[in-house]
Amino acid sequence: MKKVKVFTLFLVATLAVSAVTVYGFAKITSFGKTIVRSEVTFPAYDKNQLVNDATTIVSGEVVSSEAQDDFEGFPATDYVIKVDKVFKGSPATEVEIRTEGGENAKMKYIPEDRALTFQIGEKVVLFLSDDKGTRPDRNDFGYFVLGGYQGKLKEENGKLKNEKFTFDVATFEQEIKQIEKDNKAKGLKKIKAEPGGDI
Amino acid sequence: MIGTVLGVGIAHAYTHSLLAPWGSDYQTCTYKVQNTFGSLTKSQFADAMNHWNAQLTKSFLFKSSVDTQDTQASWNGVKTVTKYNYGAGFVARNIAYHPWLYSYTVESDIEFNTYYPFANSGLAGYYDVQSVMTHELGHTLSVNHSTNAIDRMYPDSFTGVERRVTTSDDRTAARDSTARWFN
Image (cartoon, rainbow over all chains, first blue to last red; front, side):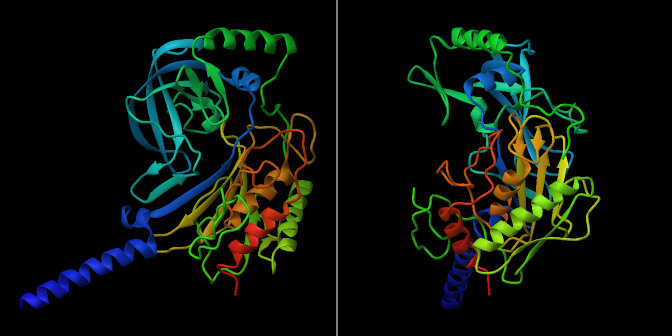
């Protein structure tokens, strides 16, 4: 009898390991759900365009997150950021941003490797856009992070950094103001389709 | 970073990684294009497919002669290319579906975000439709992004340029990728 129990346990463990190997961890942890993966190409921003196209630039702390479905039925995650400093624009004291990816009853949506993720309590600087196009869920959240990974900075050794941009913490505010002045002088336009343009 | 072929473990010189493959039942992938795309755009979609097909050991990507009225991606058994004004975010994206207990891709949809300016050329201030489509179709071949800025699978999109031609590394990655399910 003991041998049968040991054999059964061995069999169950072997099957579990095989299942994880064959189908992948994401499948096992999302029982019954379709895995949806998206690969995205973002606009390539430089600093001037990033500052120019941002409706608001803020620093703050991530205080909460909530799973949502976007209007296409794909899982998304909304984060609330408690704003502690504003560098451009006039946002509220808390801003709600929407990011791709998350999980609902039917799907686990895995955005690409460089997609934005946030942790509760994380301190960030964000370049945000309130341009939400014609999507019917545009009133469900406040902002997108501009250019995905390009629009989120984290402080590290006196620098605000992401994989593309670096700013000095001490001079960040001045640099943003200078870039805004330069952009105004150059008449820099947003990367945005003109009305009537179509493909 | 050296790219590797998932499940095979062979190292190559390209910097792309590979995504989950299609199943061996999928020897072709035919997209239905939203009927409101212009005729030149549709023709450029077909050109982008033909360009990739010429890099492979056999043709995989096709444009259906029948258009779709779909305006959004969804897992509905129909592979679509659609456009919509999603607001500031992605220029385009390729969405792949892997049903529960399937280790392979069964559907792909491509979305263009018309919040951004597109043109049928490398006009200054516009994204070239064919260049963007070529990039997205690379994902349909289960090829992920490259870290080499000259590759067509480099992730960021630039305005004012035509980048419709794949590099030899793009091609090698695509051949390695498709070899996983091509009969």
